[in-house]
Image (tube, rainbow, N blue to C red; front, top):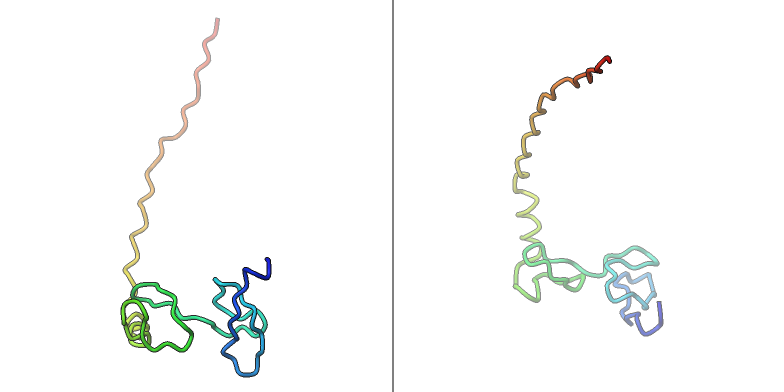
Length: 95
């Protein structure tokens, strides 16, 4: 990765001084601190400490709480196994 591909953005962790993150990085490679938050409503990436989505305006904490409280989707029933006919033995013709 070249120096021009790195973003000069300091890690939000006050004890970490790393400031050369890849533009698509979600976590600091030195300390593991989350750099951005993804909006669960519209999937846009927001700054780590954003309270509201910069694109759709959703409250990032409320959307996450609503998703956590929602019941999980019902699992699809397992497909029924079809009975396969027993393999038939080939009959050999005697000459």
